[in-house]
Length: 249
Ligand SMILES: [Zn+2]
Image 1 (cartoon, rainbow, N blue to C red):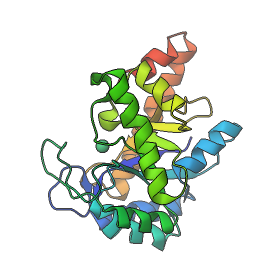
Image 2: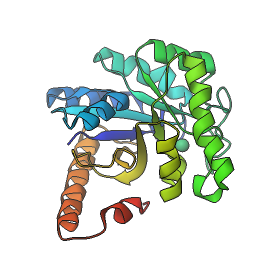
Image 3: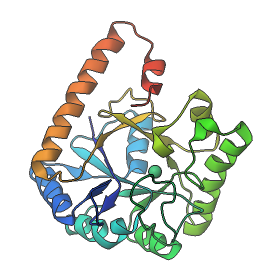
Image 4: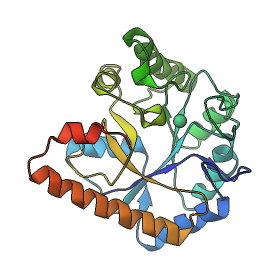
């Protein structure tokens, strides 16, 4: 049951969508102590396809490819010999998160994204402009999904294979397009842990919040475990799996 941890910015001013570098380091230390090791989302997708869930694996994901990830998370994770996965908005590199309703964050530049990639990090796609995909017409949604993959693959010289739905906003058509565009896995904002039978296009995550250190992470892992166990019980009792998974939280 690998947890996919969901972060946004690291060490930026303000509380919103932000953890401190110290908090992140404490979380890494705790995970290491518990015997965990970090893998990228692409690696996890490979395991899911092969039907093998690696024991004690954890995935660090950072939505929006914000500057603090380049400035802080890269060095914190590398101290543990680990790498993460960033989800980049391909037409907003080097700009600000104009889609955010509260604090705006700086997005890393194309060059910084390349450096992160060269350091072994995975770059996943997060659309071209960060829209609410279900609100777009099919043609626009397809362009956001498929052309982001093209933009990033061209930038990095390597095929981008994972996706993250902006705002966790999705419907069946959007999920279908993500599959058709050639992605192998996609993250939602649903909460929970990954099991061998988890739909790779509806991956749940563990939300990490401002102020979370080691104990905060432990609490959130426990909550995710409890939530997933409840879901498994519901699934076994005959509920519609796909529909319950699609409900965004
Ligand atoms: Zn986002």
